[in-house]
Length: 404
Image 1 (cartoon, one colour):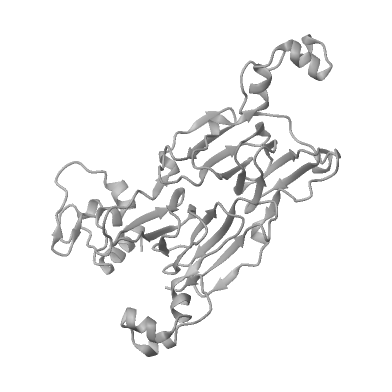
Image 2: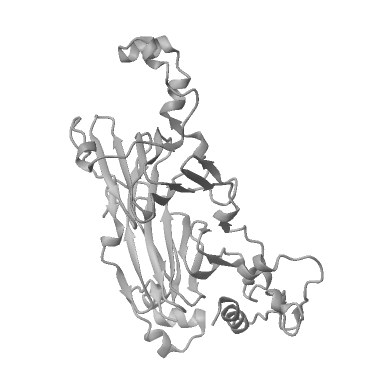
């Protein structure tokens, strides 16, 4: 079954019809639900509407005004450099995303994201390929590691670092960066070349104990992303200094044993497992077709999502009878404001894989089902009017993924 036919069935099952007899239904979903709505007579972007069927024809449970909680990196400006590119999603692209911002970056083999630092902490997930990362801390302790698909790194605010793509089947790497401030801008980082270009030559000479002519060839402006020399063995870049950093700046997320349930898996990585990551907690979720990340909310911060593969739907409940549904696919960013209830359902034919990130040292969520199971059942019944036997049968343990 292709994506469009499956989407049509899902929409119909949710009380949403794709055109329901309209000649335009083949072009994508139409804003029809039962006897409500009407087809579109004017111009339309049918491929884009097909990506967002629950925006075009929302389920009847959606209600009220909710902010936009979706942005696609495909709509972000692409900064092209020699050997790589970068694009970002910040409050400028997704205004609700005040807690965190994201950057998607590609470096070909040997290409360098130049030596730099940020006011914000940098958390990263390697999507494809391999890279070498280096850093030092304020005590002159050093760090260098080679990271591959599914690996994380975290550089605290102010820690200078570099990233270089490595040889491999993917010719370098592509990765996601997440920063603990939604107003972050990748164009506002502190770059070593930018600093040198804007420091008087006599000051540079005095600082480094070199003649001024030694700085004749320094770049006149930032390099940002540029081809560099092929790195040697990792051991050669693991310089001594004052010794290694006490908390490693990298972590093998895929090496973690996941929480396995019928319908999918979840890997949670926070400061209890990755001690260096003191401001960003994360989870990697995989849902089988039809499976769902259960109804829940997070008591300790906003949720910033990045969709790696598949297709999914999320409905967010914002109190005051407000709720809105969104469709997501690979390359999209989702956002859930603090404490809002939500779920994520796999609406495609292949596994749905996505990352959840939080500006917090610890991962925390509260399950609606577990809350009801651990509250006096007579009280729950008075609220929900559910059969008492059904309430008594609710599991008291949390199941973050439920099957389809």
